[in-house]
Image (cartoon, helix red, strand yellow):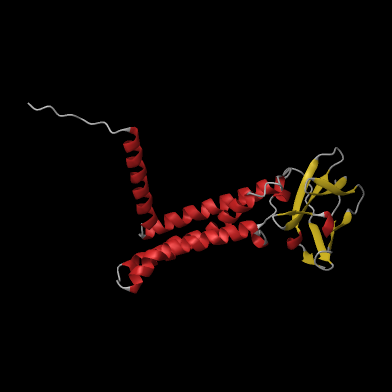
Length: 239
């Protein structure tokens, strides 16, 4: 009868095997090309992208100084749009071209990585210069959701670049006791009487990642915040 020795792998070897197996599993899922897998991956990315984009916008509405959220916001926004395209179009095309031979095989091998490189470049660009539909003011819809006060904040800007002014007013003033305009954590204007119209100058606003930004806070008679609006100079239309 011969003795059989069972060798227990070292922690380093066990870690290497676990990482290798996880990487192989990830690659298998990444390149899975059946219709069911395409739909599953695309749906998961849409859900993840919307969650990351909206959550970043909500947090930024309450903490405007957390400018690092622009990058998670940009990642969620871009993956929401590009994620399904990558797994429903780019990956199937790359898999098909890899089997053709010649130039198409070489392109097919590089196509997924090229798509991811473009994706990351767009994320960095939008995260550094946030603007347009990527920046959405969720805070005004969520602050004190039970309050029966929901006026629109209408703003227009005028003047030349560098010397612009922004004029804003509320569509209604019922139940509002005061309006405070803040930028960079500092109060630059307070209005305690209707109709709550105000004008701020561009040089009064603080830049957040190269975007001049301000917040408008509505309070009731007890001083409680009932709404907060966040606006950037780029979001305001010309008057």
